[in-house]
Length: 512
Ligand code: F6P
Image 1: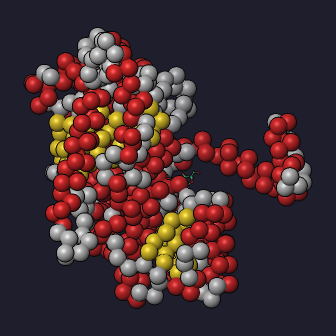
Image 2: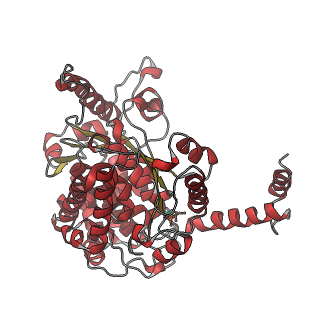
Image 3: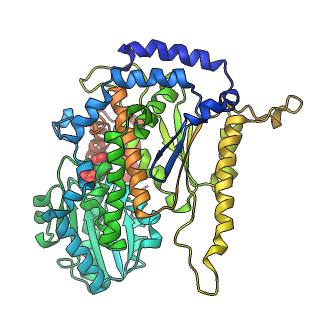
């Protein structure tokens, strides 16, 4: 456990010592800057604007050794049942390995995706799923839009009827494919929307038997529900929902970009796996960023962490990473069920740049709370083509402006600018960030970036000693919603309900 390690007190001392050192002074030490930039192929990760120096970084690496990060990583890749509360191995990274692509499971997905793409029978594909069965594929679809062709792919997650309605209103039942994505095939919102979509197909001149597919780890449940087994794409229970986009959960993405591009996406993830497995801990990007999560959260006391992609197509990455990190590590007990007594996952949030600069960045520059940031961008644009009369390189200048803005924010936050005479114009600086860049946002580069975030989450979970692969915290609310729904129908009030909720439910029953 973090507080029981011998490095814990040492790290607290480093944090106190560095509290008296300005980040700007650390940054301007040229020797330090060289040790703070790490690379994996064309991906560059610059931690020079983190409020840390070599001695504190060394102490963090001692913490990594004490927490047996390398052993735990190896146990995960070896298939040990490290998801203790569910007694399961954690197998999502296996799905990225080229060897897995020869499996019958993967081939079934490829055959279906390619046959569907070449038949061209559908104008629209509607993925119905929520949480990990939505956020990952929806985010990837947006990120890789320039690589997509064929039918439009929509993602419906919310039980709010307007979500499904507004998508169905744009589609024709006779020319649509509906994919129900649910690991458990029991999630209330998804099953309700799936039932509605089934009726919509049948009532609108379509055929739900042939126009519905399922992606699930519970194939029997999908078959019982009525999906043709030829159109059920399954994955193992050891693939956690928020880690699942590499599995059949990626089917809508494969339908959009084709199997070859999807394989490149997997290759990108696999290249980060290789880096994570083999790079020495002192140069291991997921390990270093995982250690910095702990440094910023537990030693510098920063409660939130911002992810700001300077790539409009990566605008959904913060939402995906929010589930990834907060559902994985937002816990108060250890893997052995002991109360931890220290903070774990920071609140993850963020928005695409440069829009965010014209809104909440005010608070990031001058507000009371310090928010460490990840500032992400491709160094070159991709997929910018309007017409032959409009040369592609016309976009280069705008892209450079984008990149310059990202860099300017990182610098301004870290270095600040003093103004003793006009306090409202004073920028204190000292606000840390990690700058991550890569050549272009290709399927490969995206896969590598997402696998990096997964490993950062897992490393920080190992350091906090939490089980990053279960999510019992979502259960109570689900149970209450199910019970309230039943009581609403029966016109009764659940035992133990608060008076104000009871009053509300009673009025809801009468639609008052
Ligand atoms: O409610 C949380 C959760 O279980 C997530 O962990 C999961 O990604 C999501 O719901 C959807 O679950 P399923 O894929 O089983 O429908």
